[in-house]
Image (cartoon, rainbow, N blue to C red; front, side):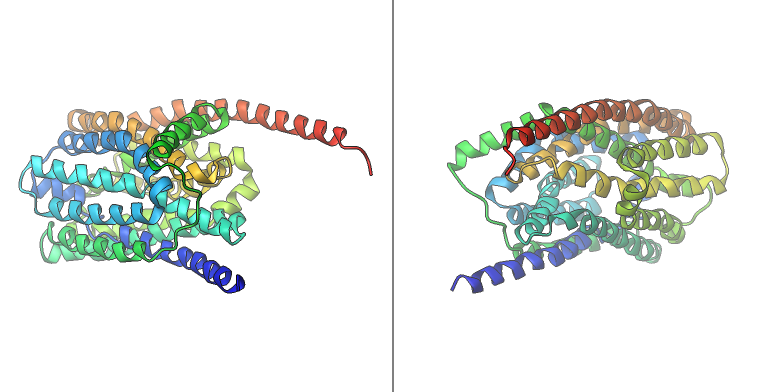
Length: 420
């Protein structure tokens, strides 16, 4: 009698993999992708500084709410967290598309940031735990790579469609249309099968989950430094890519063609996400980690030094790093995290990246307004080359020591077991 429920559970967990793909696609199939910066510049009349300052409360909210919402996902259910994320996201996008003043745009960003916190960590946590329930956790890196490739594919298709829609209608129309797409993700999340977890006292366990998740990060040096490294990479790819649309407009690209020019950058992210596991296998973990900030730094220096349209090709490696960084780093982090606090600790990773963005993105916007886009790229090139390798060096030192301690402990255990 127990066989049938077990088979039913296994099929449901297998179904979570497919539903994770659908959910991520819908949340990223947003038709505003190719035009949102131009929309704020031209239709709402904002400066670079004003646009990037919008992200400050966005990421401050993520800093304040990311770990608690991650704990909610761990304690009250990941699919509940994902349902809240898609609902809030749909509302935020709708308000963003109809807002007539800076305050309303700011409100939409606030709801948007809260939606991000409910999704962050919960989506990968439910995927990893579903795979673990059916004995396929070793497939996580490959499946997560496919998931990130699908994310980039959704953005890619939306870019190719969204820009011509904006050119034929208005810059705000594809934004409002995207709110409806996000709303379709709510029933997809509701249909997911929640992996079983032990439950205790709700209020007490909630607080302990938050505290334990933060403690696990800061008391585990390899985890601490690799999360810092991940946050630096996130900041160093996210912020400069915001200025790809103004870069293209500066070099003569029209509204209808913006998606076509941005599509290869996203395409590079798709390819790199799919090849992430193979890249690590051939290059090695440390070399793969180091290659990402070096590629970013050199590309930004090229963009800063050359004021020609063809230097646009430097954005392609940036897109590759953006697509590769999560599959590469999430696997390492997941293997060091206990299941009951996985979403919480992954949220800590997002918090650090958000803190860096909250400080550096408005700084970059101010530099772009005062000195131009080339100065902005130089700023981020120097920043990533100075900080990311340093964080990686700290991680490498403690990781080597941690492995040595583990190996020594294993040897002592083996010696203590009498021969049979």
